[in-house]
Image (cartoon, rainbow over all chains, first blue to last red; front, top):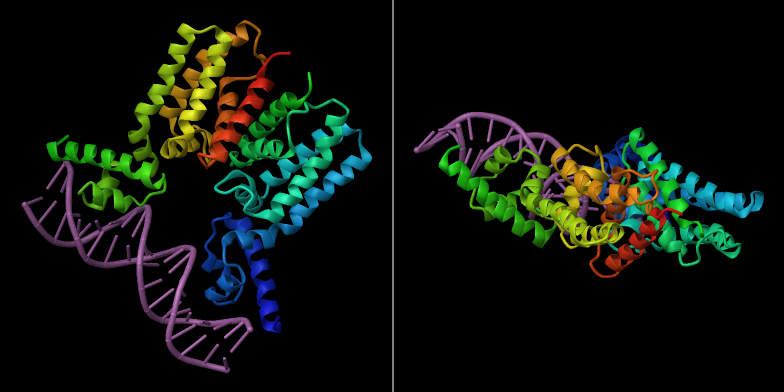
Amino acid sequence: MRADARRNHERLVAAARTTFSAQGANASLDDIARSAGVGNATLYRHFPTRELLLEAVYRGQIEDIAAKAAELVASLPPMEAFVEWLREMAAHIITHRGLKALLAAAFGGERPGLNSWCHEVMLGAANSVLLQVQETGEVRSDVNAYQMLRLVNAIVLTSEQAGAGGEEADALLTLVIDGLRAR
Amino acid sequence: MRADARRNHERLVAAARTTFSAQGANASLDDIARSAGVGNATLYRHFPTRELLLEAVYRGQIEDIAAKAAELVASLPPMEAFVEWLREMAAHIITHRGLKALLAAAFGGERPGLNSWCHEVMLGAANSVLLQVQETGEVRSDVNAYQMLRLVNAIVLTSEQAGAGGEEADALLTLVIDGLRAR
DNA sequence: ACCTGAACACCGTTCAAGT
DNA sequence: ACCTGAACACCGTTCAAGT
């Protein structure tokens, strides 16, 4: 990759990060290109779809969420790690608009699983907290990680506001976690 | 209201119904105006927002869903009516794209409760099936109708496809209903 | 009053021209 | 190779002009 191409790539990701968090995930791509000091067609060359740009911007955050799962599993009893991961994941996603759009593409929407990288990482993390508590019998065994993620994501994705929506989302999450417990 | 205004109103709703079900809820408003044989500005005069047009088109369907609740309550034991209504409501919404968008505006998204008519009718229906089963102790008492609707809608709204998505939505709905049961 | 269609500002995408 | 900016087709919205 040529030096200027590499530089433009980085500039675009940086500009996109700023713009997405300021204006939301539907921000104008022309705006992003302009604030990166780059022609708009260059943006399309590097990121043919909006989703690929979102992934480049939020890749690190997804990795953080996955790392958090490993950390919690290592430091807490299984059921506490399970509950805590779901809560932190949900809260984290809710506070980052672009992240929400990325997960919507991966789990919520049109063709789930299209964004395979994101899909796979999140599924791995979810399994690492879920399988444990199913082993101990604390969580019902007829649920799989994909269903659990879709459920939590459904709640998160449909809560827009930081204020009332966020609190309401937490209440719904509690409800779902309770429903997942074995009886 | 003048005769031609009334006629245009009806034509717009009819054209919108056809176009929404063919192209989805994001169909071009210009297309709808054109296929109604009406100037595009006339559409805006009658329906200042897309949401108001959606409501005009799907008002009858919302009423059907509410009526279904009353019918089930009258003919089935409480818990069966409760479960059946949630299933039928979900299935009904999934099969109508425009209806999904309308409920997204009312419950899912930006400012829930903005569309007050739809919000109120659905809430009334939900309460009519919910309060009964909470009375009998079959469903946990720490849930309200709004939370229940948001939960079911969250699942429905994030399942796009009629195929795999629909089946997956059903599995998630079963999970949620199970979680709502008192223990 | 109500309607009309053109005009406007905006978007994502593509493409010929540059280096 | 890679970038550029103009051109294109499209959208929602508005507005002066008609009846």
